[in-house]
Image 1: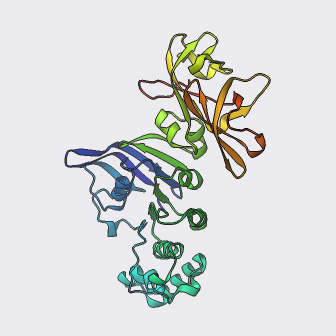
Image 2: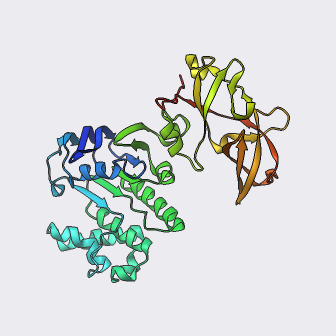
Image 3: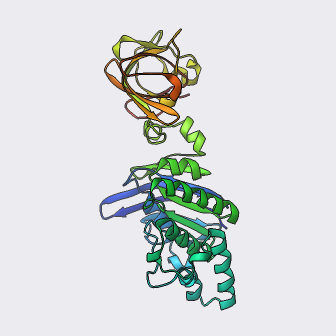
Length: 357
């Protein structure tokens, strides 16, 4: 396997600049996830790594090799697509062997590798079936097997789970991560699903409008977002934001006249100048019920039971707020709910940058 480095990548389609000076580094054996909303440039970046598109400017290296101008067949990669891209007239066995046959690999080697991969992915009993006789999850495993059997130096995944239902998506997601660990592969994976990103990645690249807004391990990016966009994109339900919050001597002046004290003001340094306007972010899971000394009190409008937790839709001085609590909390519509805040985030309303020192 190989390290992947992309430096100052720019990609234009006509007058439209899709990628604007993107830098990516994935170490040998790493699992990197490119995540972001539709149109952010993540799939374009993956296609540039694969050689399916040409860079406008910048450099792509696999290890010490400059591959910027190389054709896909010369990059020694394998790509797993959203659409499976199986040959409908070939059996599972022949689909798995197709790439090796093109390379004129010895038949005994082909048979050995197909047997190894089919056992690894649980495809032994499907080898003589055509793709139309397979379920969506089985087709995706065949697509992954066809990539694995070639033993490339880099695996590229382009939203491979988008066509699967929720339960199957979770199952195949686990299989992909297990395979990565088993093969010691270098993998780059594109998704718009932040749950996939958080559960699969060693390293997340959060893209927005053609730039990488933040890079880091999933927990770090989730807990210490550098921008309001990253904070709002990662996490389910999404982070709550309150705008036009004023910094006051006693804390933050909230909608409806309540004041939220900041217990650890040192984390924001000199950003907490009285009179300054900020945007406040609080994740739904960072609220806890505290009847004795609440940080704030909200009006409950709707309570949804989601198995082990309640998703509570509330109002704070007219502003909507989502709160997630244990299902045993006993909260009902119409309650005045006293809450404490375990962690909060502050952002500059003009730049969207975090105000954390």
